[in-house]
Image (cartoon, rainbow, N blue to C red):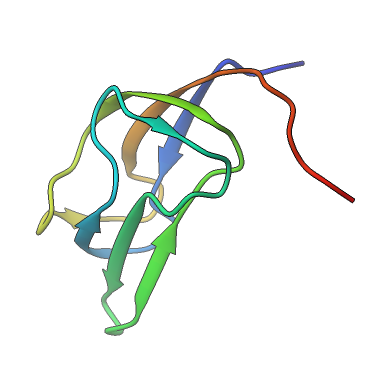
Length: 84
């Protein structure tokens, strides 16, 4: 089943260091969305395997996040991309 709304969640516990997107912006599949500094001090990128419009953004730079915390919602453009 094709999913038209995706939830972007944090896979890490830490602090949002950088946000590369804005609400209502178009993003491409696997584009870097967020940079999170983990509690161990590592910088980790957050991306998603879908393209479309960011409909909601729930964090700001400097916010503390936990694993599985919602960062944003994406409305998928349902355009199939990829290569072998």
